[in-house]
Length: 104
Image (cartoon, rainbow, N blue to C red; front, side, top):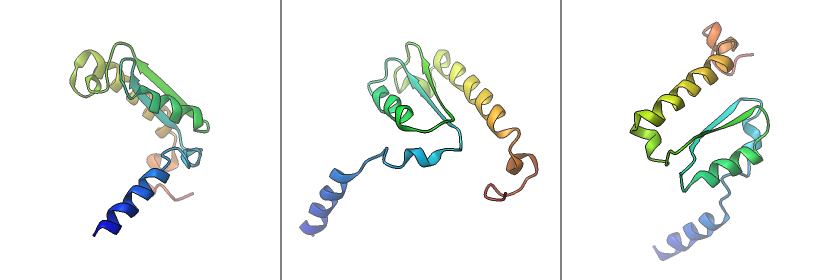
């Protein structure tokens, strides 16, 4: 039982959230973060390491949790999501033709 826990610690220590982030491309990446979020550095690092197309949107004055349920912050985030998905999915053959996403 203890060996499994120790092995888990080893795997956790080696984990790198950003190791393969470049593989998201050529699919567009949108990251929305509150300017006051303590976790904002994760978003900035992700965008820095990701390949194009990518976009970081900072919602001024918002914390991480504010983006869940405070209208003053949710509204601009949803507006950006709507714009982003409209731009990047509207012309996609999988969306336009109803084809599965992995169909050329």
